[in-house]
Length: 344
Image: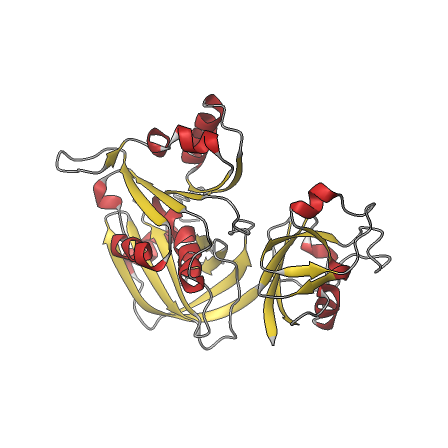
């Protein structure tokens, strides 16, 4: 039996490889050409320290000088002493440049369809089956090269799917009044066209879930959460309640509502709420901004994990609200995206 393993680093790069069941993590990494900084290999020096962000593992020997009891409780690991018991991801607080692999992959893909699902959003479907399987952590993003433009023009988008053997990829694209990708999607993108991608990038991905999980999406920031939710659905949930808030400017900006509703039956404990900032008179759902609808009593009463993906003003508004409410028991993870409005 083999398990898929991911190593993520402080510079946002991720390396993927396979480890045998109960194999030492360090041995599996070295066998796949990945060199993690290390010294003693005896569980004493702490040089190969990391943290398990998801998955099951056991450690052979960890000296009390290398990891404290608190660190062990927070799933800190020593790579030389960790045995892998499931698919897992590990984080290291240094750059991937200290390892011998680059970690990114260039893929050739073909457009299978493009759907404009709202005045401001399109869904781009790509078939990258001609390339080797792309592994990434749901929540990470790819860079897509825009064809037919002078020079190399790239834009970054979060995966709206989880990894799959057939390399079928999906992205939510924000349509701006004018922009390199927006103009391509509106006027030139057709099924059968080739596209070049580079991936994966980013340090925004789901960690091990041991507390109630909140996902806060602004606009096409929903894309990253769709990939995470696909993965949770495949796994049959995470044993904790999962709540998604999906904020948009107008009701017309909402998309993938049927897909979101399908997760209610596929993920135990999942619920979601659409929040419209400028609703029409006929809108019967939640209005305003996401912090208006967060439950202070729940957030103050228990630890939680909160993931945010959307425009910087949304992320900052939530962080400011949490500070004003003196809510300190949560672990925050966020991805701010800045939309390009140029043709450069």
